[in-house]
Amino acid sequence: MDINALITQYGYAALVVGSMAEGETITLLGGVAAHQGLLRFPLVVAAVALGGMIGDQLLYFLGVRFGPTLLRHFSRHQSKIDRAQRLIQRHPYLFVIGARFMYGFRIIGPLLIGASRLPPKLFLPLNILGAIVWALIFTTLGYVGGEVLGPWLHDLDQHLRHLIWLVVVLVLVVAVRLWFKHRESR
Image 1 (cartoon, helix red, strand yellow):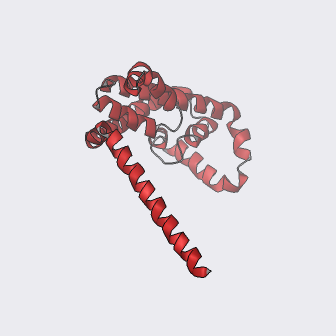
Image 2: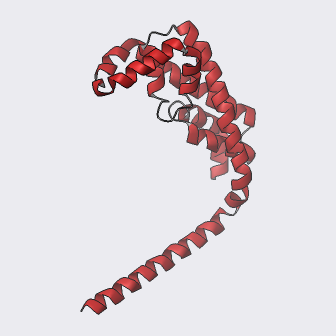
Image 3: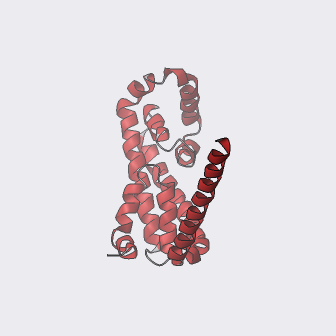
């Protein structure tokens, strides 16, 4: 079975699972696969949004249940945690949707939101909206990137051959230099 058949058969499931945590890379790759015609763009967006929403919802509930206990272990970051908690209370809409786009906040954000006791009836719709916006943006970026990567991917075997020759030449050059250096030092 070739890689294209695997992507076509298991791609959507891989997108759901992969986007449950830090999913930007897999989402971009889903967009590239949609551009290549292996997956359908709307279904990629739906799969990625679903996975992102489920992942953040689980982290939110972990934050509700264990957040205060978990956050006590990060006492050296207490001032940052307190600042985030104030931001969540003052701007819940922006924080819930924006946490998904903040580098390094994708995992800790929903935990902090849950620990802040933001009501589930407010978190859920914001989480769904944020997941859809996030999925659309990153899938589109991957799709557009597929325009650039597409020709390169079709000639991947040729590129790999060139890369292997380049590595061989570099290794030979370094080996000859080391041999001359060693010979000179004697």
